[in-house]
Length: 256
Length: 207
Image (cartoon, rainbow over all chains, first blue to last red; front, side):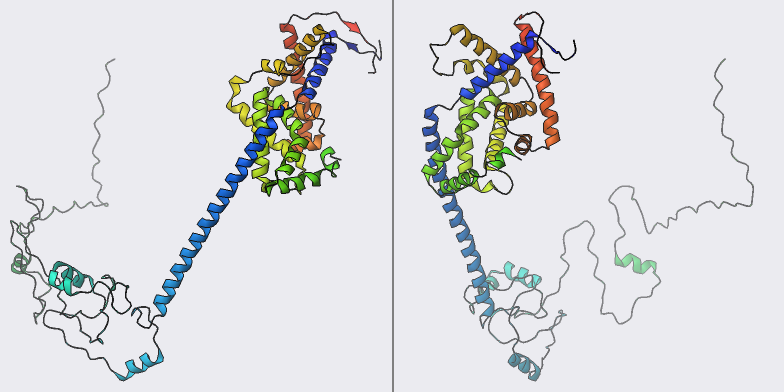
């Protein structure tokens, strides 16, 4: 029949079920005790939020004051008249004095290649690494070395790693070879002060005297420079000659 | 026009109350709670199927409203949409966390007073029918369930529902259509399970 839509009782029942569900949902409300519970939770949350905000504010101020104190200390240290020689700004008076007083290089003692330059007495100068090692290894020197700069109070003496071109009260000592016990005695160092240079052509005598040609302690050495061993020359392959190609052996035929 | 945005007269009141509550005015917070507690509780109850879970979610929602009030931007959405969004997220989280333990039967005995003048058989039948629908609704995936609850129970428009779930209006329409189909199928299964039978009859209605 046109215009008529069959509705099953299931649909009616579904509609009734839906209506019952909607009525049940609309009647649902939170229990009255929930309001008091939520108010208590809100008070607690607000209190915790205030405490947390106060803690964050204190932390922020602490960090800010620490940064400000650090900047102030750095500025004070760098602006002090007896500041470090590295950070001291050269004034025109310093420049004029440097121009009028020429540097007087003093020849270093024998065995040293460094030049000793006089410096006005005052704060100690940084040490080179080798000097620092020597000072650290010698207790009297270590005791006489001030750890802190008296000029600015708390500033430490310049780091030993700072390079400079002058010695600290003593001639520089170049590195020397330390003789250690070995099966093979250490060869004498080459005389660099020899007026006559050695010829470029290596002679067997010179080679024998310069360094022990022992490369390995095995029974059969890996390489012997004095043995005169020469690697066999590589075979010369001539491309113009047609050498018969080596025939590859065919694998044996499988038994039929 | 969005229904939630159409109620613009009440929204500034909500925002002002929220501002006062965040500054420590608990009376403003109580007013805000009384104004929105029912829709929050109903939505959470429909999404989780548990009164206890709905109470917990209601508490968490209002505490979050108070402590994270700075997240609410009136330029982006209405206050009610914002509240619905919080309830939705918390309900989904709760259901995901306690998926196997979603009680349904406690909804039948939620402590409400029974009208003694009403026919007990009709009360029982109504409770059974509502329970069947609720079971079928809880069996739906949450993306369909939330739209059925928002649009068919809370009468939100498509635009407001789209703002709550963070989807486009066509997507909301599509999901709602699919959800209703699924709900009808689930209800039919429930009917089959209860051995409900009837005769076909024809009712005149416009085609």
